[in-house]
Length: 129
Image (tube, rainbow, N blue to C red; front, top):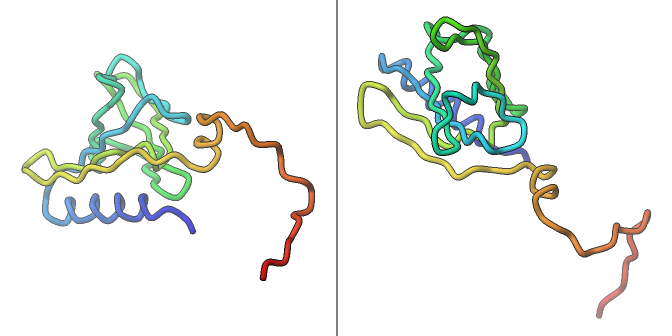
């Protein structure tokens, strides 16, 4: 089953915009696939304004988040997997949703050491009474 995280984040962003709030995302920056300007990262996190006035070419889907923006007038292309989004909040109020980082299957395998051998090309089934 695919992750529901990006659906939830997308719905929260839309809800904030519908209520005339400025949506911000908190991204965990030490995860694989995160590309943000390092000089704005604090405590392995970056907070990004994702309102229509702040970003261009915004895309959020199962593959993750991607858009173009400017920091102090310098253009940057932002990219992050959906699992790196650890928070959604509004600039204007106390609307905050926090999420635990979510590693995809590939990233989780990369980070854990496996002592098991690779499975055989065909699984072996055993009948159990």
